[in-house]
Structures are given as structure tokens and as C-alpha cells.
Image 1 (tube, rainbow over the protein chains, first blue to last red):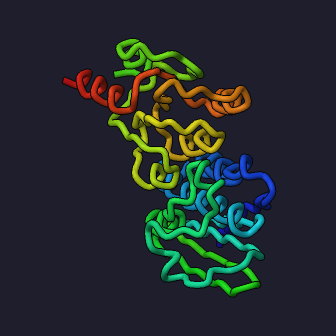
Image 2 (cartoon, each protein chain N blue to C red):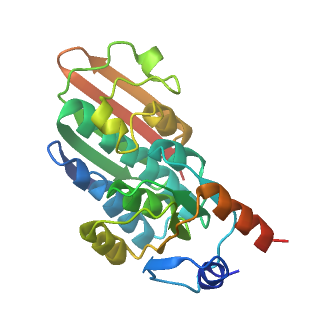
Length: 140
Length: 109
């Protein structure tokens, strides 16, 4: 039985400018493993959106990427404020990001929808005041 | 057509030229980064007026062929260095995104 390749990252909540380091590293690792470019694009963009969300809303968090023979799983965990209304948060254009984030080109309300768009399945588990855990799967 | 040939035809100013022999296909214009990540395609030319560090991550993840900064937008030195490290082609131009797009459309005729 083949064991999954496991990558683990801590997403720094203080430094908005360094967000994306984990996604770029994942992109590099997947390329080394010979994963198809279109899959790499899906995984790294979904993960980048997740990273940005954790930096904007949750003061950082953790990202874990598991690469199996038939799928890639991305698990994002934070101890932020939680998502009050997941259905609303999933709508394109809905955002609770502050204005300074918008001036950086984010906060368009496209993060979660993009994560769904680029993955084959996405599950959000969120509790107000406790945090959010998002599990995304991309089939190989 | 290669990035270098296109840059010459549009009289773009080079900022970081990492691979001017790369060929491009199609153009995407936008400043909202998530929107760009959702819609732009690999090998596109990406025209934007955004200049913060996050454009480098977006350009890398989407794998665009080249970024053109419109309306004379300049990059901070630290951003330029990151672009260099990540191998992202960036040019700048005084022209608007519309003018650049119109000229690019003319090139493909």
C-alpha cells in the first residue's frame, strides 16, 4: 500500500505580503511529483485563496496537503472568528473583508467560490468564536 | 508570438524579463486578484494596474506568460526582486489597459 505524501504549512497571520508562500511551495512539490499542470493550477489556486482568507479573517492558520494516488486533499484549519453564514459566504461577490484589503486587490467575494470552482469537493466546518476547517479534494 | 516580439511591437518598458521567448495565448485584464485567478488562463497576457506583492503570487499560480502594468504603474524594488526570483515577465507602459488591448487585438490580425 502506498502512503500519502504529506505537506504541512503554518500560514503566518501577521504578514499579508508573505501569503502565498505555502501555495507556491505546494505548486513546486506537485511539479516535482510529475502531477499534470491543470491539476497543479487547481490545487495551488484553491490553496492560495484559502491562505489569503486565513490571513484576512483568522490571523493565520495551518494548511495540510495530502497527495494520494487518486486524489489530493487540502485541509485548512484556523482559530479565527468562524463563518456566520456559510451559504452567504459562498455567494460570489459577498465579502466581509475590510477596505485596506480591497485596496490590495482582494475582498471581491471570490475566495470561497474560487476554492469550490477549482476543486472536486469542498466541505466547510465552521463554529462561531472557535474557527473554521475546510477540506478540499481534487481528483487525479 | 513571443513575449519579446509583443513587447517590442507595443513599445513596452521592461521591468523583469525572465523569458522573452515564451509564447503567449490570449489576454486577460483585471485588478481584482481573485477574479483574475478565477478567470485568467495559463499563457495569457495579464494587464493590470495592481502593483503590490500579491500580483507575483497570482501571476505564478495562474502561470500567465507576462504581466503588463498599464498607465505607468511602477513596481517597488522588493516586488521587482520577487518577480525576478519567481521568473515572472513584467513590462510597464504609459498606455491604458484599453489602448494596450486594442493594440494587442491589432497584432493578432
